Length: 186
Image (cartoon, rainbow, N blue to C red; front, side, top):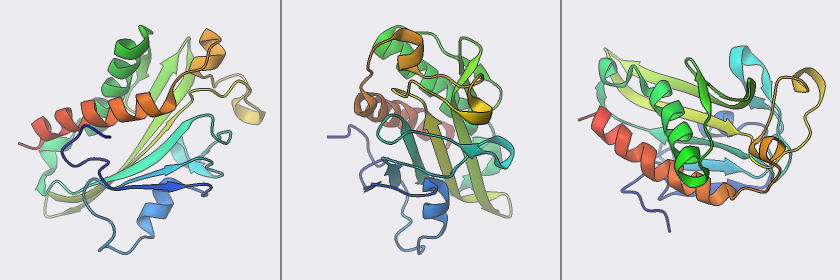
């Protein structure tokens, strides 16, 4: 059971999708409720930095997007992506004792290699944030990386040689991030 007020109370789990971010964007507005999370077991064309593809192996990593509808001034959420990154770093530290770094504003780094990324897309109207769709890719148990990312990507398992609990990391992230987010939009 997810220990949050709203975030993740409605979760859609997909066996395979090109991009969780694009999946949410194409959903009808009445389904795209505040706190909705879409998680993919296999994401085939995730969106990375500067429009690059975020590569992932089936059932090995965390690839998910979620919807926030804060109805607040844009100034209140200007550090949202950094807050998400800090929350990921905090969760890994608290659960496993490992230190991750942040390459501002949206990359999570481990041993000088990319382990995760965050994509934040907001819809505003007259400086009021109506909707934010946030996509997160976090390499957990993938051991091999190919092509253009072979030498620049890593995962927790590749670096530490053991399996990690994706669900535990996911649940803890939602709980911790929701607290930070609710404080931001007060």
